[in-house]
Image (cartoon, rainbow, N blue to C red; front, side, top):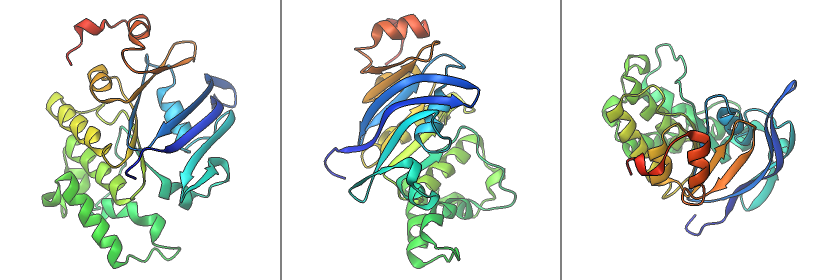
Length: 250
């Protein structure tokens, strides 16, 4: 997409589980080619919110809508294959993968396009190789995934998301287990994706939020979600996160 347009929106969603509401009623609209960062204290519901708007879990109430092939679709009525063509998800901890190679892990991102037989066509090879090249890990292609460093594993998972060829990518604390150099490298990599993708990410990294987000969502301890630019939310950042903006490296 070259022009920004609405790609994801929600109306009055409440997140949580059967016996517990986590975040309160919330409506939003997100444009293409942007970065939305979700921050908040530990236990405030960042991951629950991300899993809800990405379709992994259902909202307690409310509706979520995705733009797909120029149609606005209610996520509750989308099957798993259609949803997988709209969004990819990268979690904080990579999955257990046995002896699968890096190439095989990335190629799993092509499952929405391989049909019920799972037949891998030439285009699927092309997209997998393209993702390897874009993330700069072509030299890892034949490595066993479980032998990689944490930073390398996260790069592979991002490449798998790219191979999935979706307009939306969700990240849940992708740098949680990385050392500082790897966190910085990963932050720049994710920020660069917004040139062609819409990125929604949960993080504790205030530096990343201030430097790269188009919109910031802050969840407070009561389950309210505050939205705006970092400048608009400066008082809330200090009140809720107990961080003074003047002390943050930007």
